[in-house]
Figure 1 (cartoon, rainbow, N blue to C red):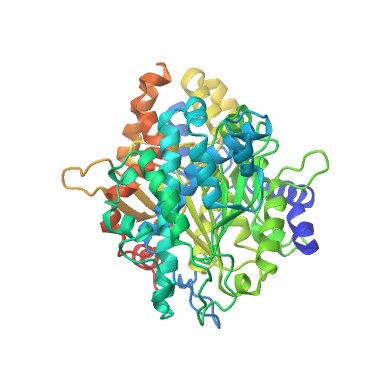
Figure 2: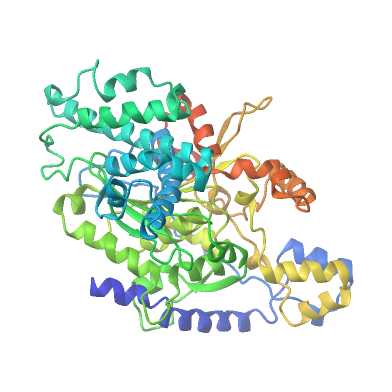
Length: 563
């Protein structure tokens, strides 16, 4: 534990010093380097610059150190990953749930509850998921007033979906162990819901009807003793539990929760998306900072010889790694909780996996947290799985390249879910430095020349890129297309080319968004595509298509690379 805190805390002190020194060294190497990027060549031609105004260029990139995309850890029992649909839909549900969970806990702390005697249980940790569902249902009227009927409905839908999946996983394990006698009969309890549920949001029932049945069925479905299996001789408590919630300073800091699901043998870190002023200020800070790569920090090396830096969205990085008032960063805080959960139970150490998820800002934080967590050696079960929902871009080309390397080496899996026409998933395109340069070029060519001469016009390092396996969800099937498109963001990198920052149809979305930006948010139809409920609706449309797919197989298929 002390080793973890010591190493992770170097992000705030020694890590920043390393990043600064490495960045300074790289800038010196770039002063007289030749032109390499198409964008800056065109810009130089348009404004007729002289040789003295040549902007800084990218150094030659080292070859990628690629693995074979094998996510099975040697000498351990293979982990049975859920289907692509189950992984995606479960993480979408959890990403939606944390909004209401944090809001309800804040109301409880402020003494604003309809039934305090029962609902104050929401502050107790660890918190069983059944208890969370009961409290949220009991405070339905208050939550509808605070969150709106749609948001409250989405939360209830997320909870019922999670409970169904958990019970299905338990029943599956019981069947595999030959203990079907302890399962719930098909004409009683949750099984009756499984047989009639149509996979759509709310299962075709009203939320009140659904929760009335769910709360009763969950209690009926609980068995007196949890079965054991050769794979798991030390089964955890039978119910999913929320062990930690970081929300005491929700108006100033990021909000997260950590849960354990024994049926799926999974520890999950969930980050909340943008709600407060601090959240939105974090989103807006699109400057790219040079941060230490995860290996230089994990190794805790005193030498700068092999240190390198990567460009990361400053707002996201500071939100996760900044140390305030002498307190450890949120990264250290969360990792301390996660490591304790892992180390306290031998079954978790040997058989569990770590998942990280979140919606919007939460998706970006999940990507960044998973990236650094996956570089740790010996403290966490690898690979780390990130499922980001509606996430903006997190880092530059150096970040994307290192992410692709870690994926190929079996250290991290990333499923990035993006609704078609969700503008948040397409941003940011470039850093604030490059935005300034583009603006200067448009209004003052001389000002642009000055920026280039000083090395502040930006280059390829100031462009943001996505990572992971992209799942693009559409509302309906397009002509000649698919409702769900799957691709790998790192495919072009491992092929030796620079990935596209935006696809053609994505550029059209941004242009349309820019035209509408002067209107009220109520007049922006694309905003609705970003809501968590929109993601829940769209993933339900592709259940049958994704039930037979696995994320690991997609890496082998989409990477198109053989060692």
